[in-house]
Structure formats: C-alpha cells, structure tokens
View 1: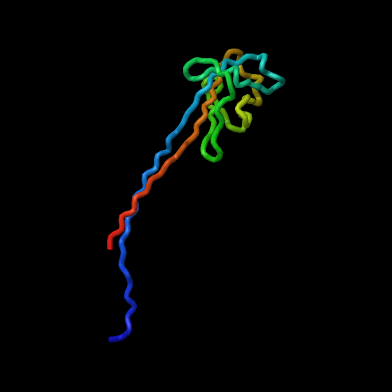
View 2: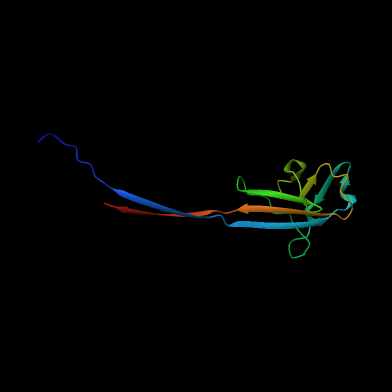
Length: 126
C-alpha cells in the first residue's frame, strides 16, 4: 500500500444572533429668537424638553462613538446633518442658516444609540 495522508474530517455549523438594542432619546424645543445670533441658532440643553414633557436639567445624551447618530427636525422637516452640531458634552445644539426659522417653530432632536450584543453557538460533528 502506498503512503497515504489521513485527514481528520470535521463538520461545524455556527449560528449567530445579534440584537441591535437601540436606545433613542428625543428632545423638543420651540424656536426662541433670543437664542439666535446672526444666522446661527444656539440652543442650550436646558432649553429642551424630554419625551415626557419635563425640562432638561443637564446635558443632552450624545451619540456613542461609531454607534449612533442624530436626526434634527425643524418645523417637522428633517434637516441635513451638515446644518447642525451637537456639542461634544451635550451642552448645546447649534443650527446654521437658522435666520428663516419662524418663531415658535418646533425643533426636535433625536439621538439614536445602539448597544449591540451577539451570541454565537457552534456545533461540531465528527
């Protein structure tokens, strides 16, 4: 019999389940022209109300690094992300090109963060 390399035969199946676990915070503000300087509206975090209608008394929740995003609505219309910035500490929101926003227009900031978790199960059969 010639020399033969014997190989171990294995079969494995891996199943992975991932949950995105979104964490969404919504903040509401009615435009006040006292917060407008030139063409920029700077809204302090304490001028917002939360989803329950309570005044915000601290900084806003900010996005997680590489795992979250903001949405800003002015008078019900979604705005381009290049038109606003949220301070790194969550202390304020600055909106550029804001001079045409009507007084008392509702402004909504939505903060979407994700805390994903994954579990994998590998079944090996020989």
